Length: 475
Image: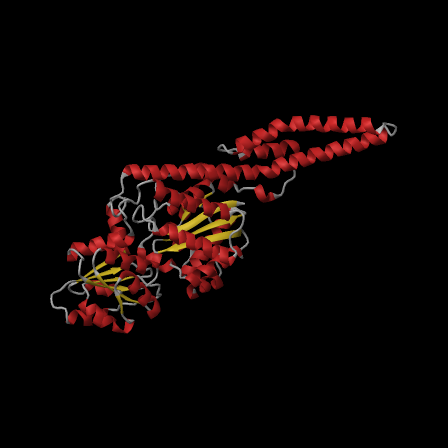
């Protein structure tokens, strides 16, 4: 069995494609079960955020695992594997572990150092637990990644600036409006992102109004931050008096249409309106950006800023020393987990070798008893202890050494040699594709967020039937 990470993120794909592959809670549950019901995937976690859709899966074959995960993602997006391939990144074994830890630490985020993704990973892991799609392989990996994320944020200064996607977007809002203190701001959406937006706005002194499809949620959030709640039906009126709108719902269609904004603009005079759309798929109709007096800040804009910054953090406020310290923690924790996994991988070999030796000893002692039937019980017992002691001493050094060597790069090769030398017929669980071996040797653990191999660079052949494609179109 091997760990595989296959996904699409802001590092490789435009926001329009991220919208296409985005998942709601129900979509994620369906995807989890579709993955583990396939032939080569035994465990799976799906991390779905506004900046990424990534599958972390335990697979029995590298090639088969990539093909099945890619097909599931493509069907969900209503596209073919070939269409998604240029944007899909693949990580294998150590690289997959390092990547997950990097994501948990906020090092792979659009705003480097943000903490929200750690909570999103925790929620993704909890959902997979509830649905029964994680087992003994993914449990320690997910737990280690969460531990890494927590350590990075508590032991380094990576989040000292308190940057998040929300805070960066609000910084762009102040570029247009100036200080938000005392300004009326409407927040649409009372989920985790909406709560973060409302809290950040309140901290900046804005007069916050919260609206949601669930009035009770809006009222609860408004009370928490000292704001007020409004029904969605009042959206045009609320928008007419607000200086800014922050929207981040989980809706699958447009929430803020051009007609609504146009109506609100009619009574505003020359007052500018800033609309911050942090939803995926987007809440605001694209044509709104073309209306006079409206300034739209969305994920595509922030992604463009990141590209203009040569792939650097959007906020640009994280110190290089803090990033380096965070990467060092990720590398340390990844190496510890790698050693644990490799030691566990050779355990069946050591057990099989000792079992085989015990069987040989028992057979020879039985043979001795038939050839020397008159041997007294005391002598027979002493001979048995002596033979077993000799065998134990002969096996002690190789079994101890193979456990020690397992924690070093290529250490599991020694276990393979031990199986070959002693003819240990273990099951094919430890078998690895030649493609996987080549990938693991070709890809080093890259501390840069864009590490990994693009799916389009791998020879992944897929055969999709019309029914497969139709299922994707209907998803």
